[in-house]
Image (cartoon, one colour):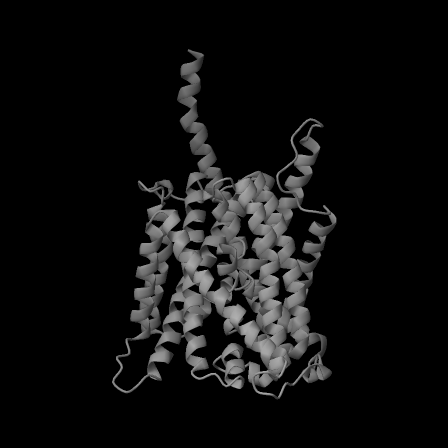
Length: 455
């Protein structure tokens, strides 16, 4: 449910309409390509996490494969991304709820957006201070609501296509103009879709606090991957079959627009509230993922030592607080500079998911080869292995390269990608300095022990 909750968010409920507007019905190709990549990345994560379940996840795996600078860079890049996204999700949920309240009857109190964002941040910070089992319960129910809404949406959409609800089914007539903007539209849609799929990788972080991770992670990978594809591709198929690209890109989102076609009252309000739940679910999951990554970085001496301390319930409370502090600051800054702060920061970290997935692919290829070379005939087989290695692994790499090439052809996404690469390079440079310093400190601290042993 955490994997589903991380991937099914406002990007589907609200943002999928932009993809339909960019590519028309051909957006299905974008979703199928992105979905195939997600499945491959999930398989890689499953193999890495089953072999080495750790809260540092792909940062730990990158460090094992390529050294401490790689682990430092991927870990801090992921934490920075989630710290910004957490703030954006709190602000987004607050803005949507404010819009809903503005359409309420006269006299309904409407708190300012920054105050609602602060309340959301405070509430979910408290949830993440509880034992991980309590956090898991909250995330389960958040994800359950989203999954239930999608299933209901698929049923309503199927009834519309069959002409049961309004008796005027469009059938597949919208597919006659399948790709109105050609390959360029499919490419633009691919970039929108790939960023919406971000969040699935939190399964790897949760593996570090899972009972019997070798079995549970493998089960999660197998089920989450195809469910995400069914929910995304199924929902978008219904949308492009019933709505025109312009109708799908309505301000209230394609889900609400379709429910309006079905004649359901207050559809916009219902879907707006669902989008709030979706954002709060992702906010909850990202606080968890970012805090565990920061805790892991501290354990590996890549972050201040006090961040590796845990409370009586084994929760890294200092890491949680450092993760959410930016969200509280951002809420205040949004009150002063509305629409300016988070928009700028999201432009920098917007393409981070491509770097993270590339690191996962490279680590899986390197570590799989190392394990295969080190394996003995009598060794027990790994609990989970990516099928058709190395062909599917290189297919994932090829798809990532394709996405980068497509991104570089568009002015907006090219800027975003270059900003992300610049941020990654700066973190890597700081990683060289920090890892050298910690290595020297460790060697200096070990010298008296070595002398005492010699004596």
